[in-house]
Amino acid sequence: METRKSHDNIIAFAIVIILLLLGFVLLRSKLSAPVFQKSPKHLAQQRRVLLLYHTDHEALLKAGREILRQGPKDPMNYRPRGPIHIDGFPVPRGVRIPKVVRKLRPHATLINFNGFVVLQVEEGIMDFGVKIYPEGFKTPNRHFRYGNRELLPGLWYYDDKYDQIPGYGKKIDEVIKTGKWEAPNNTDLTERPNQ
Image (cartoon, rainbow, N blue to C red; front, side, top):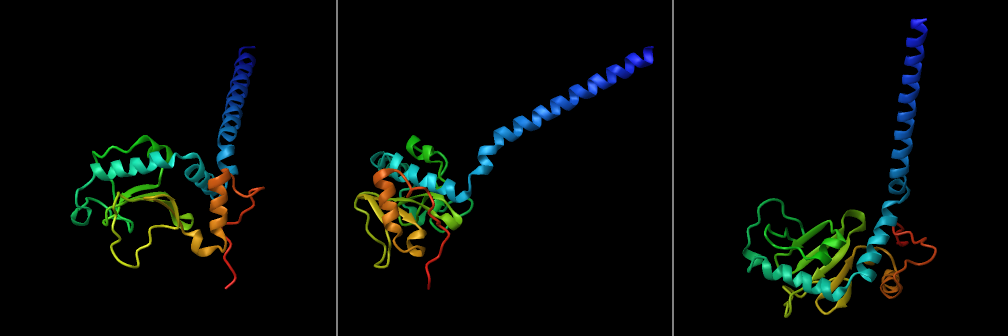
């Protein structure tokens, strides 16, 4: 009789464990489902809309200039510790990053050796962001490119897709004006023009 009771207890315990495991798996799949349903391309489009439409460009320009005021006085002769990116060096410790920049969650916040800020919102295949120039910025050479699209005097949007997709500037102008990617969001940013 006692063996039957202990056998029933073991079965009940096993059922409880199985139900807990199933609940955990279900909960985990529900929480992670939205992350895996979005493609990197879709997330990059959302970040473009955030940067170009939902961000206060005046505040972003002021924030970038504030970073420059707090940063090294002579970026060209500054010797940063750690890795150096092609666009500059990471903002030094002790320099306060304003909230408008933190809300964008840029991949990198850099100070270029020529004396401007680069907010790299995405990197890699979908490289884009903004460059923020101080007042009275002088171009270092005649081949210097500010960016692809001037948002405000001193605030330039840059995007690798300008060089890859014909008519891309019109898509960006539409995002700036309406806050939406072309309906129904079928833009293929990986397509290459016929060459």
